[in-house]
Length: 141
Image 1 (cartoon, one colour):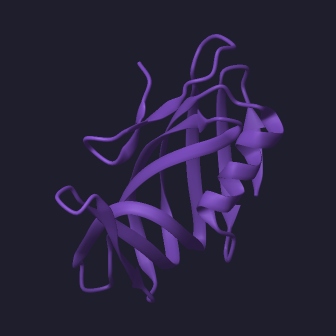
Image 2 (cartoon, helix red, strand yellow; image 1 turned 45 degrees about the vertical axis):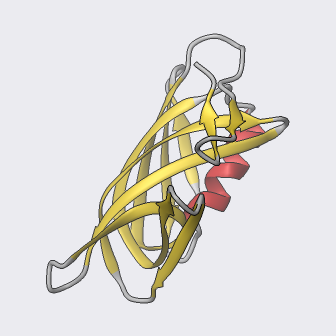
């Protein structure tokens, strides 16, 4: 992973084989980012996606083990206690242009993955708290 910082935004490039969520989590920790909005694109060797079943209050996970285009990644960076909490959704297409999408648990980068992190202003952290009715950790705004 390589990245640059322009004083307010991070531009990140992940290499083939690197994992998206684990590497971004390391960046958030090492740079102590208070919060950010995330967008990206590229390719994946595999991806594990989730669909949240609201009635059961649990994720249904599916791993897709094939090379895919990352047509879009969107998400945010917040904190739960002292740990980064990345919430990323993605859309993907296979070589037949079939689409997949959902909550990104993890993926391994194909050719490249380019990420833009737009930082939250101020030093106070963007945080998440558990909502018992929904069953998820929601943004504290």
